[in-house]
Amino acid sequence: MSAFVPHLSLRRSGGIRAWKMSTIGSAIQTGVFQWFDRVDDAFDAMLASIDKASISVCLEMYIFEETGVGERFRAALTRAAERKVKVRVMIDALGSLTMSGSFWEPLTRAGGEFRWFNPLQLQRLTIRNHRKLLICDSQIAFVGGFNISQDYEGDGINRGWYDLGLKLSGTLVPPLAESFDGSWDLADFKHQRFIRLRKNRLSHLVPTTEGQLLLMAPGRGRSELKQTLVQDLRAAQAIKIISAYFIPTRPIRRALNEVARRGGSVQLILAGKSDIPLSQMASHRFYQGFLRSGIEIHEYEPQILHAKLLIIDDIVYVGSANLDRRSLFINYELMLRLPNATLAKEASEIFSRALARSRRVELNAWRRSRGFWVRLKEEWAFWLLARVDPYVAHRQLRRLQTLR
Image (cartoon, rainbow, N blue to C red; front, top):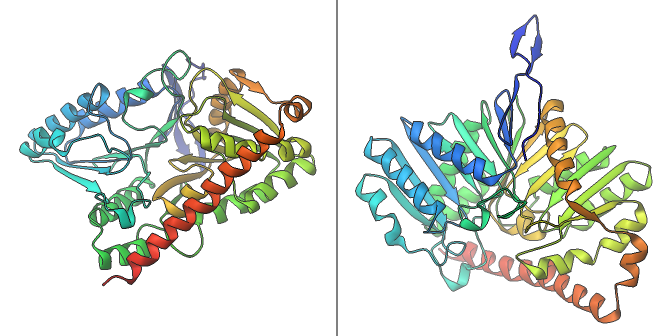
């Protein structure tokens, strides 16, 4: 669905900045940022950027399918390599389990490069690269939640999973490019290189004049996303969250409840339909407590929800990470934190459109629907995803760190 946004001019004069805004289909553009709330539009823009690239293209994906849109991307990447653009493609080996490495032979014959991230081995199977990133000429980047798969093709309403993406240029692109280089160097998981790169290139916060890049990687120590997010939540007056897989940690839950209890607005859009029913079941465990605190919960109904978006007052978070322990502590992830009132307003418009297609969960009706066995299954799902999965991943990580 297209949105109407007024046209303004962009210029700096005497320290005053005005923002240029325009609408292209469902894509809302502001300065160096352009939102996509239809994945079809995002795919078209990504392919156009690849076709325009003259120096380099870097693509990093969790899931890449060989048919349909995947073939379109391979063709565009191969054309770029044929015109002597440096093309590098990196795909997570578990996320794209059904994809054959031979799929990329046209690209490699043309001079491009392809790598599996973390080739499959049982002792490190749970450590995955969940990032979604495209960078062209180190000038333009695309981030978001969607993979390159026919599941996402559509508008998220009549067909295709509902997801969000952001195109950007400016000061955040160079650190994004550097983070891709770090992932590329790590891809084969040589042990010494793994330990070194995880600490100094793949898990930290990068400040720029336009916002911050939050990089997450498995291991001990703080999660930059969790720490930064909790700080923003505690000071918030209005919070809007779209989250496909919502199993927040205790500090995040506490911060959300505190905002609602002191009279702030907290609205959640969660999955009415999910590709991972176990995750949806685990998130239901928190509904009653949130509703009692005054938090609004809505479930997106038209299609499977896969989006990741947080609007905290005038701060926007967007990227690949879900609000669950796997994204916060186990996966390789990236998120942008953008303190930008104009961008937050546009994100709120996207949120409002999704809200209009969502069903509100009411406390009394929810209570009546939760029998003993339902609540027991929710506890079981939470235990598996919030306790067992992190435990297994951390055991595998410790073993990797002791190998020489």
